Amino acid sequence: MRTLIKGGTIVNADSMGPADVLVEGEEIALIGKDLDVPADKVIDAGGKWVIPGGIDPHTHMELPFGGTFAKDTFETGTRAAAFGGTTTIIDFAVQPRGGTFHQGLDTWHEKADGKACIDYGFHCIVSDMRDELLPEMDQLVEEGVTTFKLFTAYPGVFLSDDGAIFKALRQTATNGGMILMHAENGPVIDVVAADLVAAGTTDPIGHGLARYPVFEGEATNRVIRLAQAAGAPVYFVHMSARDALAEVRQARDEGWPIYAETCPQYLFLSLDDMGHGFEGAKFVCSPPLRTPDHAVELWKGLAVNDLQLVGTDHCPFDFHGQKEMGRGDFRKIPNGLPGVEERLDLLHDGGVVSGKISPMRFVEITSTAAARLFGLPQKGVIAAGKDADIVVYDPNRKHVLSASTHHMAVDYSCYEGRTVQGGADVVLSRGTTIVEGGEWLGRAGHGRFLRRERRGFSPITPSRVEERVPALVG
Ligand SMILES: [Zn+2]
Image (tube, rainbow, N blue to C red):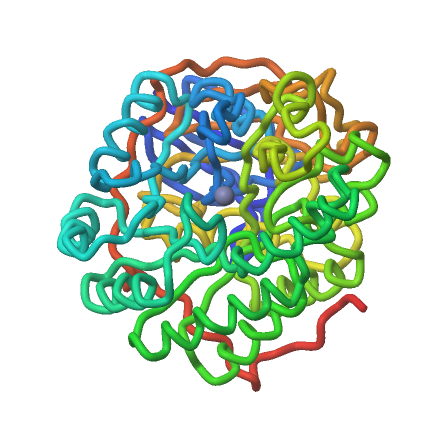
């Protein structure tokens, strides 16, 4: 099967310009001006961008939380991702407490195998970092699961103490893996949350009020220091607070391999959304939404590469029946928001259209940076020999985000009624057209498990002060 994409503008992280793309089988075969070659299918990309399919390195399909499960399966969640222009996800396989990493991985392979519509990899969530599991980390890195998420939050569920975090960091210093951190001071948050409930604040807003930005800043600083001591890189997931970003910025200025992602909810939503009585439950996630001044700093961080990319932390729970488990006590609301489908369009609209980032930076933070940081050399770039994960993206099409039209299996949208400019018109996954003109042409089971390369593959160098450009915002 040969597909020719004609007349578009190729946008990569480091260059942009008009060219045609010939896809042969699963890979990009040829790129050139005015290609005149026979093809089984020709896609007219006139006036459109041709960009590498999005990579969302932070999703939770079917995640168990507090006796229920995140609504999207690997089938519905990856289909929704594809409609939004994302062609690869990296999901989190949860180690059962007392069990091994491989047990968690086996469970997640079962969830994904034969169901995923796009390619996928796994990170491991470390539920208890026992010493005897350290060698298993080396084994996993060999097997293409190169990243391990630890927590300074959720005491009794996921929390690792500083010693355990240090040991895990030290292990990745030598095995080529990387630790991902959820950095918030969980034990202290629990004290404030209990105080709030005792004082009668039981609505969802309490979730946001209990988790001070400084608790994220403190935990981020602590983990950076531990990583420096261990001689290991570290990657912070879902960074939300300017306090935490300031720590990352300082460490990167000093040349340390410290990386961080943020998520659309921290750029486009705010603490106010968690008000309005129990409606605010729709916006309960951790870390929580912040006041708008934090988002200004996050945009600056994205513009100058103090933040390397944007993942979604997609973890959808229905408002009815699931979020409602926390009526009367915000601590019982399942944590998580839907978002895997809306990431590219939000970032295009709020980032590129508004002039905060360039089209090339848009591609970098939605795809290329994740491919580099997480060891996916076949992904994240439009180039000959790479996987033909391609999105024909219309940077001018306006549409309205709504639960009535989205493809995620959840009964609300965080962005209900919001008009965004930009949308994926045609989506190819390894050469197969899976979305075209709003129609689903893909299939469950098309997606393959991706064994990822160890860190060291095309590393992103730490930013240096002299490379900085003034942020376009604020
Ligand atoms: Zn997460």
